[in-house]
Length: 203
Image (tube, rainbow, N blue to C red; front, side, top):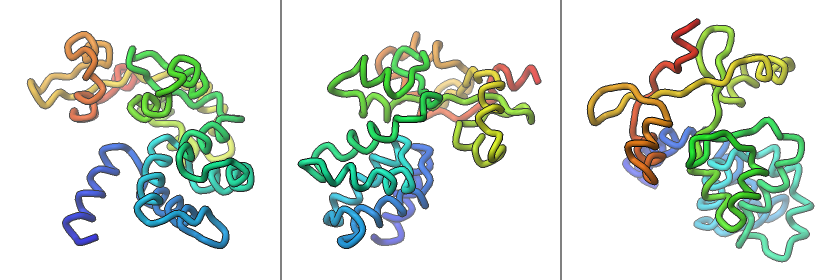
């Protein structure tokens, strides 16, 4: 990968809110022929990014390693099998679906039986307002609050996320994006710039 490709890839990861170090860790595990899945380079690159976007980290993948290896295929439905295995013990993980409402990953699987993973990847992660008056995702709460993050997360209000539209420079909510853009609102949402959530302004 040349410098231009690397910069483009970094931009994609930032846009999708994916940490490069997590993608790299998953990629190494997928490629490892001794203690990993032994995938070819192109296949490992594809699934590393897909898994990271779905919210899987290297530790989760490693902890489910033996279970996943027992499957008939190591690649065809790897992303779905890995994330399905990681659902246990994570009922708090929710995302805004195409109707802007919050659902758990298990609910996505129920509502979208054949397309749940792609729907999950396109969905917007939930944010909550921390004690500093700013909105954060669950993994950011974990980094900030450490051992007490779950109680802090549960006690914090859900953030009504807002975006600054590049088209008219005004700030809108997800519901307003849906009303205006219809089925493509999630794509348009990703093109906007983050603005303060409604609850953040009230702090």
